[in-house]
Length: 112
Length: 114
Image (cartoon, rainbow over all chains, first blue to last red):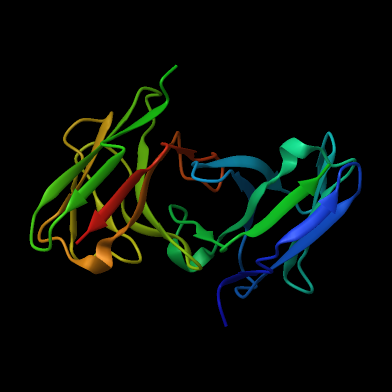
């Protein structure tokens, strides 16, 4: 089983809709979780950290489900500019605090 | 603010050639990282550094060497390039261990080995 797994998509969603995708992780002792965004042929950029109690940043909501070992990202009122690949990122404890494990990404396209 | 700058942006090498990728950051970050990104595989950590003069192996270190002689620079060397090293290489830096601090990425180096 991969350490971090994501549905590659693509998710094609009309503008204004709500979209959500999950990411599962294999190491139950993982402590830190993040969502990064990567535009086509660009570098990854931190979108948001994921906290145990869930957290929201504008139209974006991230949640953590430790029992089922997944994190989720929900985007409300989607904009054309939300089109990107969303990377799930986990810090597995066996690698110490210096390393991150990246998922392969979920590709999202917002359709006008 | 320049942030994290990678040079070169593109390069084509022949098998067996050597080269060095340069990463420079102007944020006074302690931690620096080199990743490679290949289709369907996500970013994989090659080497990293937790401070000036220190380096450590990541997940896929074979065929690469690194040096961190100055805090702001992290160099990635390919000793003898192989086609399997064709990839997009990203450098990143963070203020501290990324359990607490986000990583800031450079805009990548596209490397092709023929």
